Image (cartoon, rainbow, N blue to C red):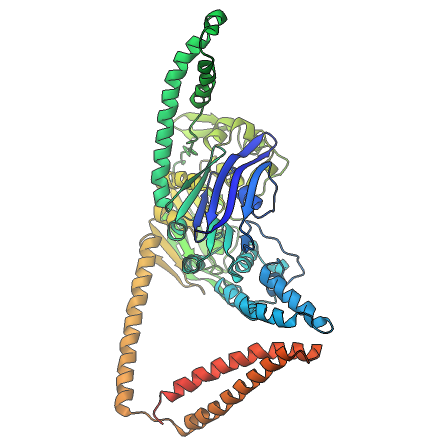
Length: 621
């Protein structure tokens, strides 16, 4: 296996905070690696170091020569004046740089090196670069290629950046949370796209189905060290627990030995002077092991929901639209006690607007929402992360409450409550601007739950949360004595939490499905298969009818067939002429430009007309 990337003894710290210490790993050709760690452990920092976006304290990072690397950042940025398609040419990669080199050559008198450039353009398929960019953007639901990037939402910008990373088919693709802001259809398209390609992959994602289906290896950052597992996410869970159990046994054994050796070390120095020096050295090594702690803390969500009565809320004949876009069309629903509902649908079908109508933040065009008197909402929104950057973490919580009621007479101080969410005393007195994206999400979740809600409305709660926090949040929601609405594109999360789904199909078409997401996906696939079989049966009947009828070419089709033969021959001749001219070295700059643009157009016309000629040739003349 060809080694693409070798990292040796990497150390990275921010002041007193050490993220990585003498860590080593490698990535080889064809390896698909998922990177897992708790929020704040350095996942994004490691990706930034590898992509030369950030420096490091010590160690070596060695790439294979001429390796093409694509990198999708967690929060990509582009100059505001660029259009969507221009953004795909903005970040320099080998193909873009080749296109620029070709354009400079065409503008230079004599066109030095043109023949070699044309060969390289063909080899890298640079002529098709823009067309390929548009195809991938369309798959990611970005179809206005001339739209300025300053008008894009954060999610749309992330999708443009994802297209940018995929276009050139790099040897090594680095992805930081690629499924954030992708709807379920796009996530499954990306999943299949990555599985089909041969590129190597290093990826951070919280989507566990995505990890299982795309990655064949897992790297974990834990306690400043890197651990590598040769298997998918399910295999990693099993082997990680074995590692933790083995470490716990080793620490316990070292503790027993440490107590014996400590007694020996505390004796009179005179007595110790006659002992072997190696035993003193061994003592300090044992002490290091004995004082280790297995980093297996979890977020502990022990918050109790307040009492909720039998009347929750009733939505009665709701209508909502924005221009031609229907969100709700005569929607009525009565929410049941302890109900756990998931909401799924493509981006732009109105899921977040629907939630805001229920929360009273957006008014329907008509209809009513009647909320029960005992209902206390806890709303976790996509745009709710609005903390004062200069506040300390502890102050954010204390501004809401100094003491948090847990129910059954139990109380916690703000500091104790934060520790349940893995905020150490040191982090609590740190400023908000120092927190990672995932830590901010965890703090936001903390501020929602500490108010003891009995009806949780969670709009994309999984974005930027680490997998460990997600596991505990899932367990909490399963045992939550209240109502839950979850809008999420995380299939694994939905499977664990919800009882049924509201499926938003667009234009006010909302269906209630009795099951979780996997049930819904199986049902959709079965339905699509039945429709395909029915269509095939229909086509077979049509084919038999046509066979019996022995359909002949119409006069119009015969004329078209003859005309196509002439046009294809003319286009083939034009193609040969252009190719000869481009290699002649006798054309002016304008003529070279004109012919270079015309060549891909001619190729496309030949393909299109040949396909139609083949269709007509199958009909009896």
